[in-house]
Image (cartoon, rainbow over all chains, first blue to last red; front, side, top):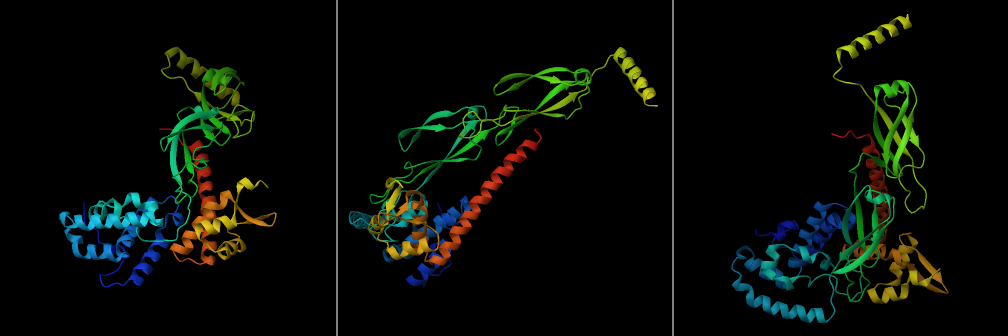
Amino acid sequence: MEFVDYYNTLGLNKKTNQKEIKAAYRKLARKYHPDLNPNNPEAENKFKQVSEAHEVLSDPEKRKKYDEFGKDWKHADEFKEAQRQQRQQQQAYQNAGGYSNQQEFSGDFSDFFESMFGDQGKSSQGRTRQTKFRGQDLNAQLELNLKDVYTTQKQTLTVNSKKIRLTFPAGIEDGQVIKINGHGAPGINGGPNGDLYITVSINSNTDFKRDGKHLYTTTDVDLYTALLGGEVLIDTFDGKVKLKIAPETQSGTKVKLKGKGFPVYKKENEFGDLFVTYNVKLPTNLSDKEKQLIIELQNIRSHGNK
Amino acid sequence: METNKLVLVEHFCSNCDINFSFINALNEYGVIEIIVVDDKKYILNEQLKTLERAIQFHYDLNINIEGIDVIHNLLHQIDDLQEELRMTKSKLKVFKVDE
């Protein structure tokens, strides 16, 4: 655990007054606020540091204690009495229904802060209007396999010790976010609960590649079937499908199987297409006789072209 | 419109200790939309998050209504760009050669 220089965090010095602290906090909070930096963990971390510094320096008592003992935080005994008193004050404050916006981030205050002020030291500053606020929105990630999301999935998840049954409709996309109303953090001062956002992460662990409702796959065709025509059997999510190969099919030829792609999200019985690319495989380890015959074929073709 | 999907502005203002003029200004700037049903003013339940974010910006970060409007529009643009990026990445996967 390291000493945290709160003045440095806010870009201030020890002689700074409350007005300057507030101005510095607001400037940095505007820069790093998570709502202004979506999906930016670095900014969120910085915002937590700034909030913590503001939490301490904007409270004259905490600031005094920090200025006096901050660098000697290891001598925790000296703070015990002060902490006890502070707990009482904090309790009285909570009974009065006070609320601080910093509560959203209070769970992540540094070890240094915990050591100096204890768990009860959080959030005695900030907005003190008695307000009802929605709880914080929570984010979670759920991993599903491509094959799973071909059909509608019903899953039971445990969120905040409560089991919730969720349905993920067939055709859900990688990265799609499902919002579950009211399953976020509890509301504050009787406000409504926040929402739960589940980001679906799809493992494409099959031979298929997916782009929205369409699927793409490649299948090997042996030389002779490609030259003379024939049939190949391919796997689809819907079972095996027999495909006719036209004579003289070139490698890289693409065919479309209408309706054999992925289900369209929330549209029953509507499917995309499956695109199959033929990859003509040349024979290897040719025998002498095979080589002779191929040379013969080559000669026939050369003469035929003349 | 079903009123169970709406939040009475009057209730919101008293619960959150917010002036109606602030909500009205957000409505005028198009950040949220006030819906009038039987002479009562409501906001959509789904706009609560936007509204509370605006309250934080204004009261905690000292950002004025014009600033909130700009941020609101830019966050929408970020959302759209992120969706576009997600779709582009999905398309790119089709062309990615497996190792």
